[in-house]
Image 1: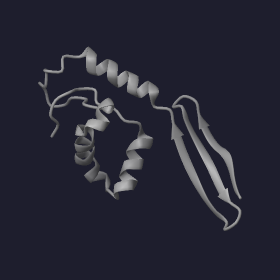
Image 2: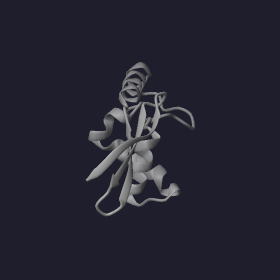
Image 3: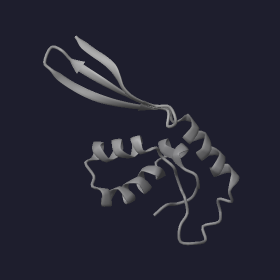
Image 4: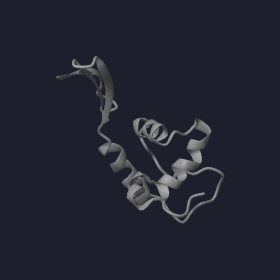
Length: 108
């Protein structure tokens, strides 16, 4: 039987950590769940509110993702911190990840 308890709650970031304990074999896992609706809505607003043809300057925000997603991608793909910058740019270019974008156009 697996027992699940709330491990930590962060209402400001809409994040919940659950502790799962498997009584049969003594193993456990910590699961992080985050409601990202506000981030996605903000990205949509910013993507539509700015002039997406203006790419002048050295730095531009092109996307916004929650840290829980960032570290999940890093762990899933076995990447180091220096490798994440290029990976995230490529990841943001995938059509299924368009809602994490705040600016349209070609990245990288």
